[in-house]
Length: 144
Length: 145
Image (cartoon, rainbow over all chains, first blue to last red; front, side):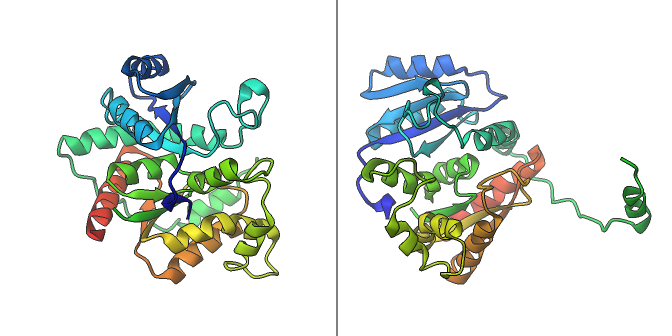
């Protein structure tokens, strides 16, 4: 398994929630100010961190302190700036639509984490009723 | 620390939550990094090796389209290594790996067949659903210890 082997590099994608006040520039400057041995690339959604796995995870934890519920991360298979993926070199970007879809959800997640921290309990799931035949007929008969 | 398979396997939300709660998420990205770094193939996962196709045969029959076998060559070994799984349900059509719905169905079938604990969480379409998702995930992962 890939997870069990020692990894030489780890590339991590850091994404800022749309409800957060942190900016990608702020993230990149914070990483530079740490003076750690890793590279950082500022992007429209946050930044990419690349380096030794231990350092990358430590820097991610430091970045999270800027906004604990507003900064999210995941690993990335391709290195930062890889010509097969980087837009600057006309690479394809097949994972971008998924990133965009998740970016839109991050505000919900951020508000939920804030609410749970303040001691709120999740409301029960609303019961879903069957669609009445009358409404179903109306939907069927709509002229588009 | 347990190994948690996430579905969709490329989801940042699930990856991040599992990491925050102190476990190791098994994701597509980790499996693909090995192929990107160590193998001389043009563009994984679009291109696969002969070994991948053979590995895929363990999870899907020879009559199954090669695309499904290729995908299962990436996800299958992770499902085998997982201690538990978290699956997101009710997500819109375009969320997650959308290339082949049959592969996604096969992943769910393989997870059920392994008999590991599986948590089915709701897609966080609003704050309340996100709260339910977070509470259920936390309870599930704490229960694994």
